[in-house]
Length: 218
Ligand code: DX5
Ligand code: ZN
Image: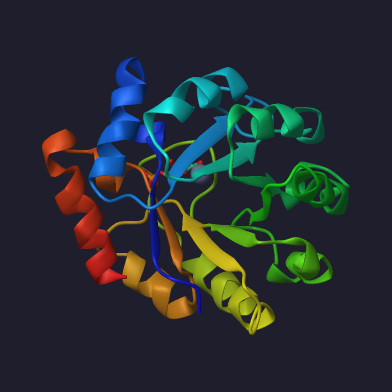
């Protein structure tokens, strides 16, 4: 079983001070920095692209966990790799050629992630299992921080965990994760936990305590 990882999502950070926010969650013990890229098309919200990822790269040495909620994703994969992404995750729903996207990401020398929306069956991962380093199971509908955790996604997590048994694949959950929900996700088999609101809600003085609370409850 891969190790427990907490990935603060800067979607809930102060966008006017993003560099300092990244530095702060690094210092507070975040294992990965989760970067939510949205295109206003695949999801009903807009965030940022490769130039912002690149600008943030000098604020931390922690891995950048880039979650692409964009369609198509393929035209931008090289730009995110060059910007400093370590893992690049594409949604299986984002186009007909997830296999090609994963191949491209690995070809760029990066870890390849595949994300599933709450309405997408775990079986979608099966034919692609040899192509992934990470499976991201959405525990909310993607697009916004601060939504409520969907328990219905737990079944998907356990199915993916069964599928990945014996392989070195991280199972990440994203959406509504906090000390009250993380235990259920961990019990279902997740080992990487994205948290936006639960880390950032009370300001920088509390980041370390917030991250510790999530890790302790996982
Ligand atoms: C949602 C994003 C998440 C989001 C999670 O579309 O993919 O990473 O930041 O935020 P919380 O933890 O607040 O639900
Ligand atoms: Zn995300």
